[in-house]
Image 1 (cartoon, helix red, strand yellow):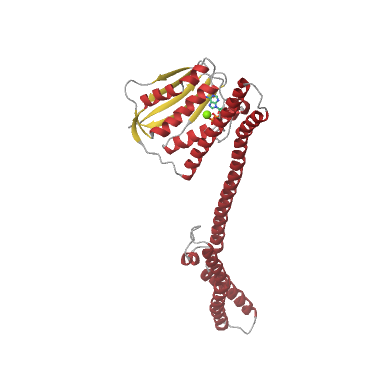
Image 2 (cartoon, rainbow, N blue to C red; image 1 turned 90 degrees about the horizontal axis):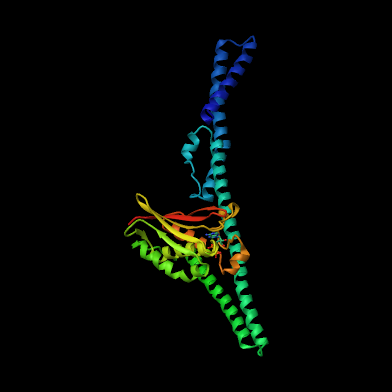
Length: 342
Ligand SMILES: Nc1ncnc2c1ncn2[C@@H]1O[C@H](COP(=O)(O)OP(=O)(O)O)[C@@H](O)[C@H]1O
Ligand SMILES: [Mg+2]
């Protein structure tokens, strides 16, 4: 409707009708005069209005439009100019496209802001996490230096404590390296056909001492025979080890930690289940965030970095899968993910 052509015709028609109506009031004007008046008004009117509209308004819109197109061609879909002139309302179109453009840009700015904030927070977190074990080790070593006459037993105790802090520092740096490798994409998941059974048995051997300390029993419940999946051996070991260590650390003393494997059509589900105190509901959605710990003081004692589950999540995602958690207070926690059958 709003095309300049139609608009000018309609306006010219109105003007011609009004002019003719006026002419009809003049006694000397006859039908010929009125017809000529009507036709000339109509023709001149439509041509003039057409040009005025086209050159003033629509050309202006078009130049604005070209300008936007220059700003960024790839950023948003621009209707070709031809279409713009023929479409119903170029101003409306222009507005729509400007809105899309602004929305895209706003989204980008938000993303950038988020990334900047994330970096800041990460740096602050890392510094904070590094500070703790360094300070502790530093304290013990300096105490030793300042008290050279202390008896051997006490000196050994202090050295052991310093060593423990440094071990914590080591595992923190290891985990940080893994996180950074994951983020930069340096970790490549090499999926191979692997058998989960021996892998899990090996993990159980690795954590035996830890489990014994808390008198936790370990159990594997799985279908008979080989459990063949497509996965990266080292990375999936890391995932299961992390989950099992967590279950032992945060589960019940004298409790039970189970790995339960279920066979599905195209995949196996792997669950790590404990019967410990569980994770309170309000923390559940945050435990996969890095450095997030439910109980900071308790985690400090057990030397956790708070990075374990975020690494787990990343690795599982890199296997095109998802990790889920269910937990009930005083009943226990269950972490579960799927691996494609080989
Ligand atoms: N099986 C579990 N039972 C109870 N709490 C758990 C369990 N697994 C993890 N958590 C909680 O989630 C937090 C994050 O775990 P994780 O990322 O592995 O860090 P870390 O073990 O270094 O503390 C832990 O500090 C702990 O509070
Ligand atoms: Mg952990």
